[in-house]
Image (cartoon, rainbow, N blue to C red):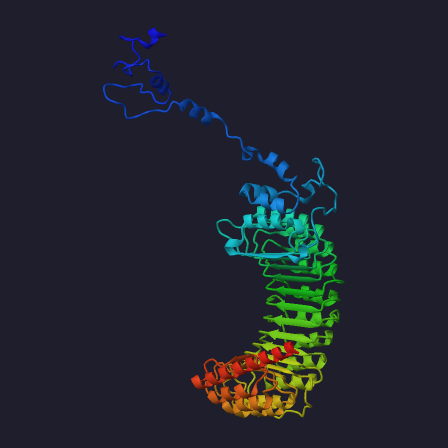
Length: 601
């Protein structure tokens, strides 16, 4: 051993000589394990390499052992054995991978409590799910609408039966909702009853078919602006969702007649159908739907469709249970279609009908509807350019059950048609609304004597530039029970027209809206406040530029029940505002003292 320590010569370990002056010192020899200068020359080395380099290299070569290294199949088997509830939610928060795996586990793939790995394949068995799902509702819009959020919702609510209502509106352009997110909902939310999708172009039939398969309790389905959804979705829904009662389809060009026919044949509980802007839907689909659901369908809406008179004839013949009907923007429907629909006499239960933008509606057609639908109570006509006083009066003469009538942009209706409605429907008419009807003007026409309309309580007239004081005074005499008055944008109405209406009111006006009536002054507001202040709840004077502080002071002293006041763009100063503020302060104080006395006693 001493020879080893004293070794020296040309074959030395280091060409520059011994490393240490006295290599026999054990402390110096042991320090060799800490740092060795292998290439030391005359100068001291500035770089030292740890002697543990072999250990580091060995550690790098060793493969790290982690649960994340398991393939999805193994991790799936582990996760499906987790108990339902908080444990699953906690595991879902570990990583996106775990979340998506948990959301892909179907109900029948979750192991039963105490099982050793067998699938829980018990048909309708809802083990692990409660019945609270119908109480839960979620809505995702814009950037929040992603697959990850849907997966989190599915996993987080699964123990409570999933969702009862889900709405997806818009889509994240970068990470939008796809079929993956819909599959997660289908697996985790079996109790889903209401599902609405608006403006989502990244989903197709595959995702909706999964929804139909996993959410068999579905009762309401809304599809709007989903260009990749086709008849395959409706066929799947009709086969797997027997409880479907409401279906709404809008701007889905790939949905056509085949899908509607399938819904009609296999959807025994369909009560409401709405179809708008679907270019693939025609007479064949509408007729097939009606002939199959004639005994349950109660609400129907057809808008912006290329259907013809045949569809309206089918509605009139098979609409035995239809109570609400909306026909809007049907360019291919003519006068014949409306005439046949009315004369088919199948719409005996029709309660509400809305016709908008149908150029085929004429006086002959509306008269036939009045005769064929004697029980209509709510009637709305919008943008009917060829409807005149003759047709409107004929309709009201035949249909004596009218309680609410709305006319919008029907410019051929004049004062004669307006008062003809009161002449024939005075017994039951309750609500009248006129919007942008330019043909109604003040005329010096001799009108027949009419009895007061005791049931009438609401009058709304908006943006009818020809409507003035004469017509308003006549309506005041015919409507002694009037409680709601809205006169918006009527520049011809002045104090002279409104005061007779106010004087004829026997019950007191509760709601008065005079927005934009620039010729109304304090002479109208003061009697409104002084005579009917105790019943006044809503008063709108927005844009009444001739109303001053005198009105606000009167309001402050005479309207204890007023809950909504609008005096925008009026001639109100600080004095009027101060009066209102003081009135509100004392009113609040009185209420507080009353509540205090009640508590003390």
